[in-house]
Amino acid sequence: MGWIDVEKLAGEQHGLFTSAQAVNLGVNRAMITRKKQQGAIEQIRYGVYALASAPSDPHQEIRAAWLSLEPSQTAVQRIMNHEGPILCGTAAAEIYEAGVFYTERYDFYSSTRKQSRDEHIRVRLRNLEREDTETVDGMLVVSPTVLVCDFLEEYYDFNDVTTLIRDLVDSRRKINWNRVEETAQKVSEGYGIPAEEIFEQLFAPALEVSSAIKSTDPNNGQYLPVEVNKYIMENWRQSMQEINRSLRESLKPIIQMQIPKINVDIVDIPVVAEVRKSLDNFYKNISPQ
Image (cartoon, rainbow, N blue to C red; front, side, top):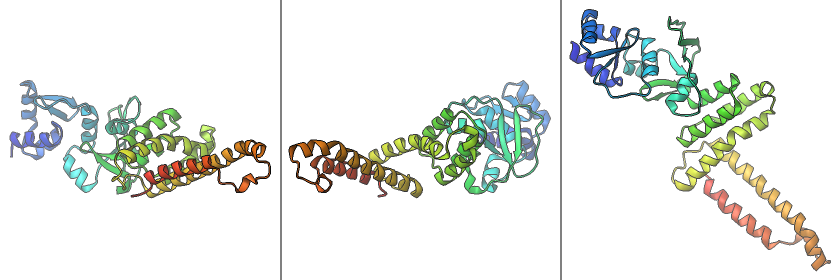
């Protein structure tokens, strides 16, 4: 083992390695200092280095912060064993490339108490299930569902959360809408908006994007979770009924003027039938394949 092994490991970690990882591979700290002086490596943060030959990485700072919290373990080991702090907050949104948040610090959840001397890193105690995490861009990150619910519980700007959801759904990230609805109930008073309205506003962009995806990719039947399909079908069924009712009421006076003796309530108005047919076809397009 030696420097070649360090370079190989760095290649698996987007060009990064920690001094602890290098020592585990048989490279002493004196050699690390020498490589730095020679310009072969660059120090990104305390104990974390990048190969000078590594390609540009827009998430380098976040990745370095993540590696620094479990410096002796490799990224692969942490992902395989599901160990160590898990990225959350705005930095996680940045990794998902979703939302328009500004990252001032790097937030992590950890199942054990852990502290960092870096003022730009915050680690909070929380035990997450595997289903609440995902591997994104070589890092353990909270799931889209946890991310959305966290932002709601921290009362982020509502429009920003809506944008986050739109971007997540647009990139085909799955969200557990049952949990989002439960969270909407909790934060309703804080936002000053009825829980039902919160959920509907959050769901609207997802509905729009999901429908577009289904229309262009009809074979993608697994994209929309069951509860989302049910929500879509129920809402459009109600919309169809409302349109039928509205058209019938608006046309009733006209028909009665033309044929006074006809009972409009039992007439199958052609216009209503046509609207019903169009909505039925639209409804079928978003139904599970």
